[in-house]
Length: 315
Image (cartoon, rainbow, N blue to C red; front, top):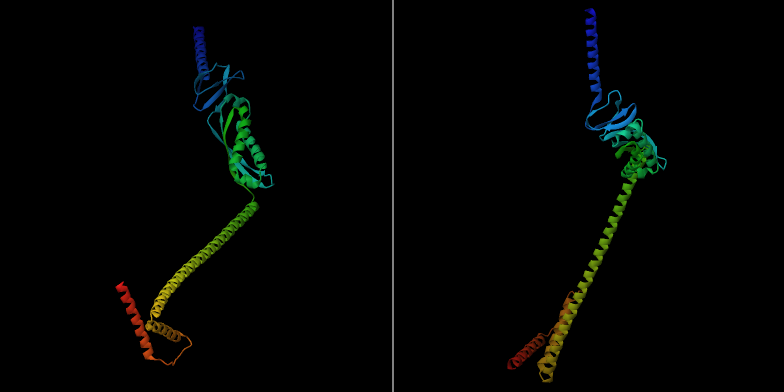
């Protein structure tokens, strides 16, 4: 009876152990891969395949998960370092690298410590790229530096199953003495531009003033020319009128009209009196004046005018 009980106890213990072992094997064989990750599978220590996101089964005791790889794009901060430019200027620089694993197997087995490898690769190429440029060129061409770094690092990381998407220089900081020299240079350049602009302003003002004087002189000359033309025209008309009057008087004299002679005498007499009175040196003038002769001359002028009017009416 006791032997039967012992046999039943040992068989139940074995069954329990078997059940526990089977449950452990099931847990070991079932693997769930989350989204964004991939797992490598090793059989007796050798890579066999890659598990994509989802539920998978492994062969118990023969296969195991080797490396869990994150397939999402990852940001890697690059430590700051001192870099010497081509013109022997020391600058402090740091950067950030964006990369994504595209082949989990190569990322797991082609390089040890992927992040450290990418960090050192980026730092080395930053020194190479910035070291081949002058200080001013490196400070003003950050996009060019980023493009060169991206090209070089992406080519070097391809055997590791990594795609480098972006490399950005976060900061390029020259030493304080170089910063002060650059600030003085910038101030001098601004002062130079201000002086150039001021000189250009004076030049333009002088040009405009000269053009204004030239235009004024041209307008003044044109005005004088126009006035001369008008004065000449007035003198011509006056001469024509004088000639016509002389012709009429000459015809009257030829006809035996004594009043025409009196007209000329009275005209010259009155012109002489006008010139004497208009003189600036004359104060008081005492001259003999024969009023009867002057009145006779005036009456002669009226007679001539009446005769001319009678001829015009008869014609």
